[in-house]
Length: 295
Image 1: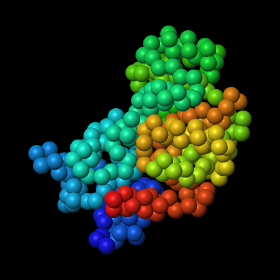
Image 2: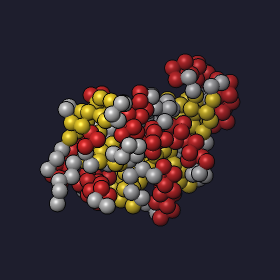
Image 3: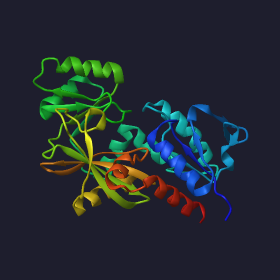
Image 4: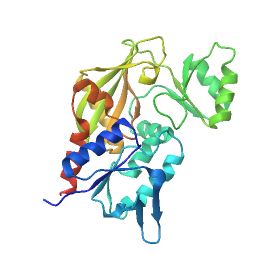
């Protein structure tokens, strides 16, 4: 069989990026970890180069990360990848699909328009309107449009005399106010429900271990294996299907009123499920891609 060459778009030293590149090398004999800041796109030839390698000569790219932190600049890098994808280079997931979830507002609107249950959310540029919503929510979470692992998020309370000032400061920093009602998590956890190509792989929980208001590992949350009910898997699957990502994690909160979706992961993090289940997701993802480029 002819050797297949799969490149991994990721970050040097990133756990999942390195794992995927290692798995690609193990299964194909070819390993290339591509850092987008060093890619050159030649528009006249519709070709792109990284470290002397013509990327259009590869069989496929896996897009794991396009930068170390979330920002609108990542959309620029995804546009470069889109140019290659729409000119025939296979990519997993497709850049356009990633762009729809990378932007929190785009992700939220898409979920809303597909009737996926989410926490109550208000989006506005007007501080008065945001304050009215906060008075209704009582407790709210301010979320930047571009972020991961709760970076930049703030918990705000209607009865805090500084709440208006905090809303004004948030608007000053981010222009758009994205305010979501804080949901109560009776079990002090939320879930990551993982899919590959629409197939359900498994679920892990992020469990609070301290007094933090969120469950992220950056705030002390710990991964635990979790066996969800069928309705949770079905809900997460519907959310995943809105975007058609090849590998993704759907964040689901278990509330007193039932499960709700927080977001769908842009880049399909798999450390949680690999850590808790022992499943080698990186190997499985390379197999998934190889199967599709052989067709």
